[in-house]
Image (cartoon, rainbow, N blue to C red; front, side, top):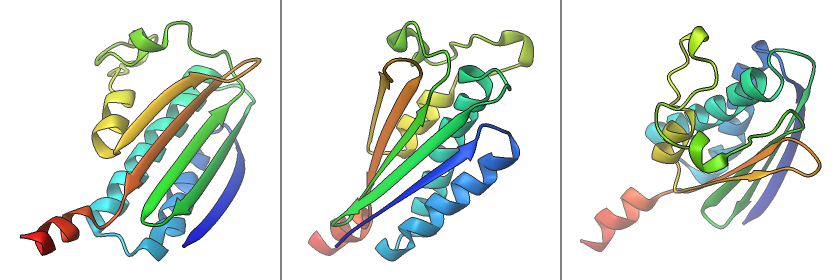
Length: 147
């Protein structure tokens, strides 16, 4: 089974909930558990919030979200065209934040990584960042069936 979707939204806080809901609804065809849906929604939330807060610093901008389903795997790509990340490895370290005055915990990438099977972060040319994540659904059921 293959399917895909694309969404472009303004980089504003109220669109974060919309983005997480859209991606959550898109993956329903994979018959996810509630935990799997919540994992996806949380990871999307973190990625979109990073775009709003860090890529655009709450200023005008656009976020592109692409998702596709291949078999039982959901692939998500969240792309911004903002300032980009100077040192991606450093930014992915737990508790690293560029906005300590805003009480940011610096756990966004760590949260995404913990809820998804894969996470990559790369520069978007000529500017911005691309976050790619994937999650395979039904793994817990398959593991239980194998026992």
